[in-house]
Amino acid sequence: QVQVVESGGGWVQAGGSLRLSCAASGSISRLNAMGWYRQAPGKQRELVATITSGGNTNYADSVKGRFTIARDNAKNTVSLQMNNLKPEDTAVYYCNADVSHNIFQSGRYWGQGTQVTVSS
Image (tube, rainbow, N blue to C red):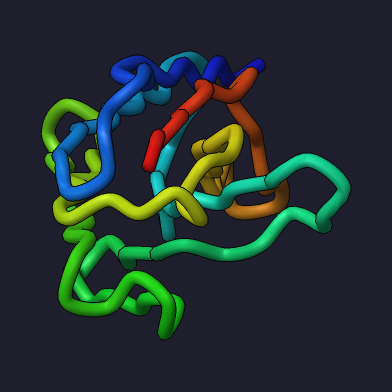
């Protein structure tokens, strides 16, 4: 069993900043890619940013230059620094962890989500 817990959401005015954090714990032999996704009302969940265990990152075009993803492999945590936030960034943000339990079993796990609201 793996638990993924996010924190750090909230309300901010346009142009402001927020930092999201996520911690994975439980039956983890190896923590592979971690990522942040978001879902706005009436829309599908979309990728925001991902980071591999080696530190390679990938961002949605809409957040490039404004958001930064980082991870601490020793603590099994990932963060998302969000700067110059826009109203269209308003969504529930979800953390995802790609976990290897052993050489035979792996899985992807989601957190419960944290709300980010950006007012204009």
